[in-house]
Length: 191
Ligand code: B4P
Image 1 (cartoon, helix red, strand yellow):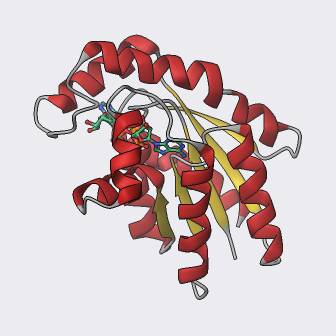
Image 2 (cartoon, helix red, strand yellow):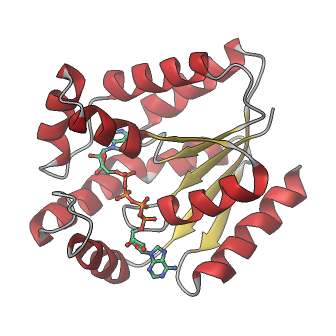
């Protein structure tokens, strides 16, 4: 099994690039953002709880997202490999993921980190907010709060994987096709 983490700040292109990587490599896509939005649209208890955090630009509590990922791993025993998109976002989530994978005799192969400036992130998210209908994209205060959460809690996740020599930095600005090619080169080199 070959598992990849696609990492980066909000709006860095994780969702955009994930779609392409899945089409090329056949990974099972696990996006905690998509899983949470699905819970919200189904009006579940978990979704109602998560919405409060998402709508203020904060991270959803670790135990909620770790539980969701654990269920998703159990439901896909035959997956050739997972692409984790938007997870882990805290050190506690990273440690929990390593434990869950180790229980299945497996581990993360590579941690691909998209690098994009804050000015470009804000521009992309507000731009997506014009059409996406996402409540967390259409307000500059919420967008700034998401970037602040990333700087306070999420960026340190890269340091966690750096100790295992798994981190590769990828320039996330420029043409979507060029960024995709750079990601594929790194995956092909590790396969
Ligand atoms: P996510 O759904 O993970 O979303 P994201 O970080 O906002 O976006 P992404 O990086 O995927 O951006 P995209 O490709 O779409 O999270 C949403 C919220 O859920 C979080 O704020 C948090 O509250 C909660 N959450 C999720 N996971 C969690 C976890 N593990 N723990 C706790 N809470 C969690 O790109 C954005 C825009 O840029 C698009 O419009 C795209 O078209 C454009 N774009 C992409 N690449 C481009 C390029 N190269 N050039 C120009 N534009 C580009």
